[in-house]
Length: 184
Image (cartoon, one colour):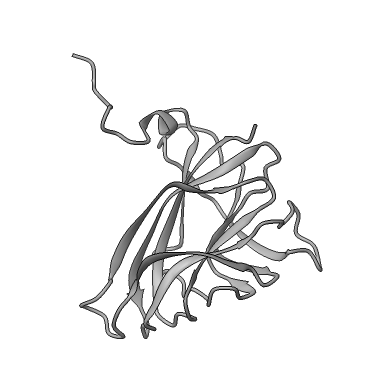
């Protein structure tokens, strides 16, 4: 009997090698305030012919003093495709996302940072509705999954960074999941 993948929501896209997961190190990072210029986790579409369709975001508390805050996205709609002094993105520490087709699949055409980027002041775009409700570890949000379901698409030359409603002093391990599809 053949396997039935009808309940695997992104199976066709994963099997085609177009879904990627970018994660921080297990030690995590603190998220900056929305609209800031020093980012710690995000995705930059430097492709000229692909869109990055955001599928999901995860966050798990790791350590540090927690700031009561919510997670969201800060965007740069016209980020360009190159790092330069005076450009919308002037520094970018790249990481290597993993293809969700484990053991196969192409490398991502996007630039992903698990740790640091310097940008012009971005635009507050969307808040996920998840965050840390209390300033102590234990009760409250210690991990979350936000299903973006393709509701956010980064067109070529745009970027998005995970931020908080206020600067976060707690450290979170995070992952961003996206699908790379033709922009035409």
